[in-house]
Image (cartoon, rainbow, N blue to C red; front, side):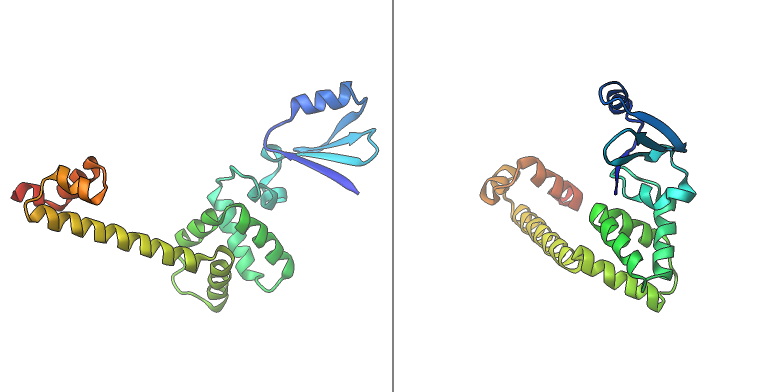
Amino acid sequence: MTITLTSSRYPRKLIDYMKNEMNTDVETAGSGIYYVKGTDIDTQILVSKQLDDREAGYLKLLQVHQKDKNLTKNWIEEYIDNIKNPLYAVIMNVLAKADPDEILEVYKNMGVPKISESNMEFLMDMMKKFELDKKLEQKGKEEGIEEGIKQLILKQYGKGLSVEYIADINDIDVENVRKIIERSDLSSDS
């Protein structure tokens, strides 16, 4: 069994503590890989920023602040090609929980002109994982409510009610009422 500690940057204080207080040795095993010798349990430290993209690209995908769209795109392409492989499914489940918006954004921007069967399967799988259908339905409801409020405000303004009165009776901030009216061009008509 090996304990693996990961960090986006070199954990200098931790390594100094391990060397000085725990009397361990820390050896560099490769770019971004450090082995800690002298502990009861084998321990390694991975510094993700130092890791080679080709060798540890998918590990970098798990970082919270990972924003390499190309790395995500490459992963999605590989996942689509291996969609039936359970190992890929496990990795995708972790990535889907870590940053679902990133995965969907990159896939959308890939510009896949024709949706193949595996791409359709990927999209359906992602929709299930992210409960995207529920999110889209909720977003649609919110936009519908927003549009209804805008129409109500514009109708009230069109009937000659003051901005302040409209804000008061609808329990909406006066500035928001003004913005809605200004964007609709009704303010120039009155």
